[in-house]
Length: 347
Ligand SMILES: [Zn+2]
Image 1: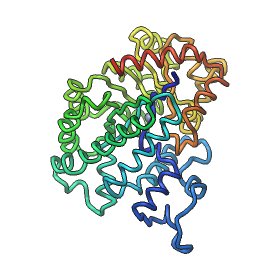
Image 2: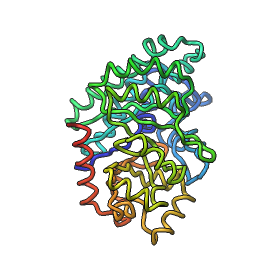
Image 3: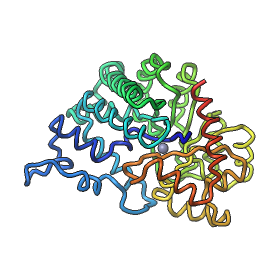
C-alpha cells in the first residue's frame, strides 16, 4: 500500500479543480478570469501562476502560490466543492492518504474574501458560524470521495504556529474536539522564517495540551527550515510524527533519539528540493550524496513519504514514490513504515 502521509488540502487544489469551481461559483477574480477576453483562463495558464517555477530558499515564493489558490474560498459551498475535488484527486494519486487542513487560515480567508475583518468577529462566532461549517464541508467532501473511490482517507486538523489570535484559537479548540471521531489528529504547521523562530508560542502549547485529550495523535512541522535543535525541542512535546525533520541529520544524538522513541518523520522530497535547496545540498553533501530519506533510513529512523503541497510543487504522490526509487530509497522499508504509521492512525 502506497500511502501519502503528508499532504495539505490548501496545496491540493489543482488548476483544473480551481477553474471548475471558479466557473460554477462565477468567481471573476483576475487569477481565474481574463477580463479582456471575457472568459475563464485555461488550466495551463493558471498552473503557471500556482506552481513554483524553480527552487527558492525564500519561502514567500511558495506561500504566494498558496495565497493565490485561496482566492477561490468565496463561500462554504465553494470550499466544499474544492475539497471534494482535492480528495478525489488524492485518491487517484495513492492507495490511501491523510489530508491536513489549516482550519483557522481557511475560515479567516473565507471572511477576508467576503470583505470582513476577521479580527472583529468575536471568537465564538468565528468558531461556530465560520470555522465549523468549513470543517463540516470538508468532512462531508471526504466522506463522499471515500464512498465514490473506496480509498481510505483520513483528515487531520492543523494549527498554525503563527498563532494570529489566542482567543480565536481557544474558541476553535472545543469545536474541533467535538468532531474528534471524524479526525485522525492534530498538526502544527505554518512557515515562520527568520533565525530560530520555531519554539511554539506558550499560548499555542496550552491550546494543544487541551485538545490532545481528544485528539492524541500529534504531528509537528519541524527541522525543515530550522536545524536539528528544532527537532530536539519538538521531541520534548512527544509527537507521533514530525513533518519533514530532515535537519535531524545534522545530529547523531537527534537521530538516535528519533529511532529509539519510534517517532516517524514525514519526508517530502520535492518539497525539500523546492523550498530548502541550499540546506538540502548541505545535508546531502554531509551524507555522501544520499538523499535525506535514504540517510534517515540508514540511521534506523522510521520514515513515511508525503507529497506535501502537490499543486505549488508541481508534483504528485506517485511522482514522489518515483523520486524516492530513483534516489535509492529502500521502498520495502518505506512501505513497512507507511503500514506501521497507518496502523497507529487507524487502530
Ligand atoms: Zn507540510
